[in-house]
Length: 164
Image (tube, rainbow, N blue to C red; front, side, top):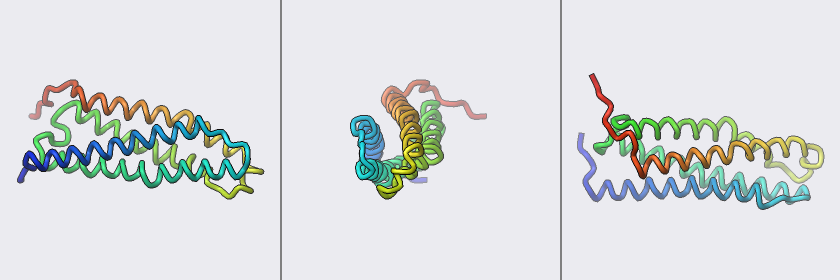
């Protein structure tokens, strides 16, 4: 199979880094919004929840898709492959874990809080529980993203996995 040339690899790295910046930056923004903005009215709660959902649905989702697409291209059309290096295997594992956390835990919490202002008057416990879920798992996501970033830069465990 044909490999990407030097220029193609530079473009691939550019897109991969852009997607990572999008994912990490929006993760930071979502956490900052959750911590720094503490609305006291139903309208404020609705607006905050919608802002977080927009970041999640448009930008983080775009970053995740960008990471997956560029990682697959890296795996197929460069010397790195998918699992030829231990550090790549760890990155794949952590990326899958982050996607599952986002999809199974964070997504329902974020989506559950996007309601009409009237909903908050009778469902404040649900709103608070969803925020608490985000307060626990949001920083976990940022920690995992940071670990993946550090692994990408330092490439530990660089020895190739031996194949039979």
